[in-house]
Amino acid sequence: MYPQVNKEPSAPPSYSESINAQKYEFHNQGNIGGHPSTMGSQQPTRVVVVQAHPQTIPPLGPRSVQLTCPSCKLVVTTSIEEESSSTAYLCCMLLFIVGCFICSCLPLCMDNFKNTKHSCPNCNAFIGLYKP
Image (cartoon, rainbow, N blue to C red; front, side):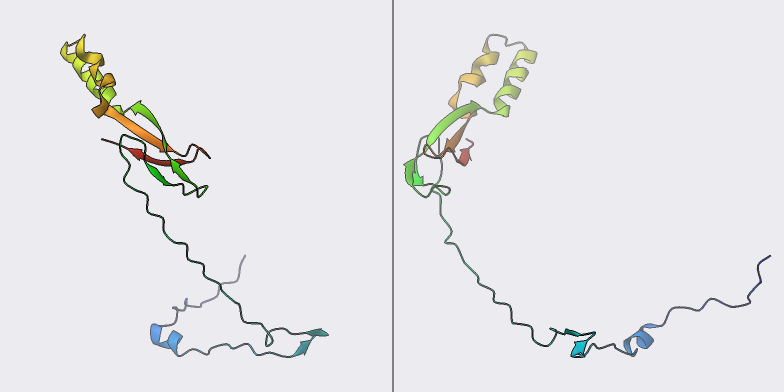
């Protein structure tokens, strides 16, 4: 049905053959097909690098701090919101399983188990989280 061809498959060229292979170069042909070529008359690209001054945020703690907001660039005293951490809930479950039913809600009331979320009162941007 199909004619058989007794041809052995050829191996790809070796590394040294591929290095010494002919290199193709493109030259500006000038006016090709009635359209002027812009290959030789390219303008150099101008790159402008702007470096922002890194803002240092003072260490956040359980209390409000005064700082420059990275979002709105105003000097503000942060508004804080406290919430119980996941370790507080784990301690509650552990105390409940052990049998201390009355003391199991105690970690939810302790300040050592609360994370403090700092935000800007002006633009409400999140600034940071303090974990004790």
